[in-house]
Image (tube, rainbow, N blue to C red; front, top):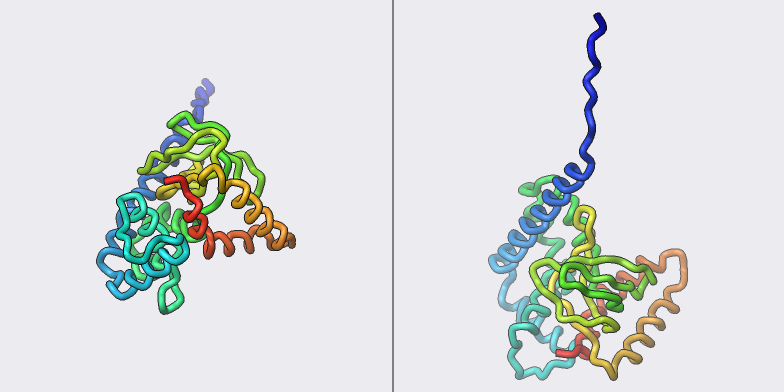
Length: 224
């Protein structure tokens, strides 16, 4: 008598959901470890230097203390974009010092977080779960999902946000700011000019470098 062959049906939705959960947990773990690392390892002199530069780039009064929102913008710029006196970013130093403690999902995620920039997008639709955006540096339409922070945005806004792939979703990392209405034409012109000046095979690499260095400068045009 022939043996009955057992049939296995792969539940791809379940596998996808499990992978997404692992990726999001990895993001939470990296985020927690990273900001704890900064708290314990960033020296006061470096932070003072960074605050002076941040205020210069965003045209904040030198004597004015940061409010809660501005401090969040500063902390994320300091974490991901600011270049220290030794020529490294805090996230690069964190990976170098802590990578032995990372799981594979955490290590994979770090590569994306290292490359992300504060980039301009146009808000197409926001339903408080996900945001449909047009990424102005590429022209692509994407769906992005807030992580830890709930952005205050409206359809039609020009906004700046850090976006990184986390599993199957594009996550918004850190606080978001929108451009004040009367400044939108100025910002659009500057972005278009940056794109035009980098019209070559390595355009996206050059644009990322540009936004890594100058993305926070657009905070001077923010609606706060």
